[in-house]
Image (cartoon, rainbow, N blue to C red; front, side):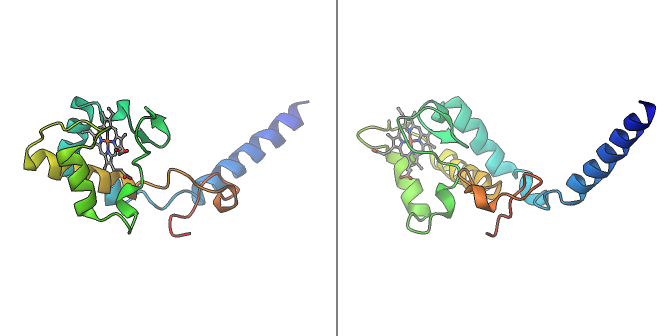
Length: 134
Ligand code: HEC
């Protein structure tokens, strides 16, 4: 009985080590928002963008998920700026000043660097991580 506990304990330690050593290498300075992204994050919360938009699938569903909108090469920065500055028929115009618009864009670029909102199952490794470049 006692022996099986030791075996389980050793397996646990080895497995934990393997998961940690295979761990995400993404945790660089990119994961810390700079001043502008942080200001954008606050505006995001103050204007409740999340009530219509999702980040990683969480949020309202009137508008699209914005986690990776910044990496979409078909939609350039000017595209984001136009939506955020003027709104559309469905999205309100929040009458934001230029610095708020710029910081919201910085926030969207920063959140994009954190990962992909939809990762296909075959890209996920055995440890639960995935490679951003894939
Ligand atoms: C009342 C709901 C609502 C709120 C609140 C809202 N949006 Fe939107 N947003 C939309 C909808 C709907 C669209 C899609 C455009 C359309 O169909 O007119 C959109 C589109 C966008 C797009 C373009 C996305 C794309 O891929 O085309 C961006 C960027 C965006 N919103 C940013 C924001 C930001 C930043 C805020 C907060 C300041 C915000 N939105 C608040 C409803 C909303």
